[in-house]
Length: 87
Image (cartoon, rainbow, N blue to C red; front, side, top):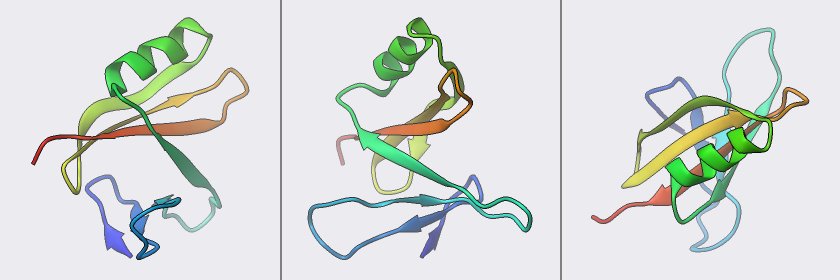
């Protein structure tokens, strides 16, 4: 598990395809943020806000030539989005 700048661990399955994601750290909290690949992080975050969500962070650089961000839905759940950027 690799550590990221935001204090999260990045889970890598070792497969070229499939789900990979971040795991939050903390002693009392138990949660995971699910990330979806999108063509444009800023556009996805803006659309989430249009639909009643709120931006948590991003877009900002992430490990592995990625750009990432996250939003909170109206129910309070956090979801992440990412996009692979050019090398």
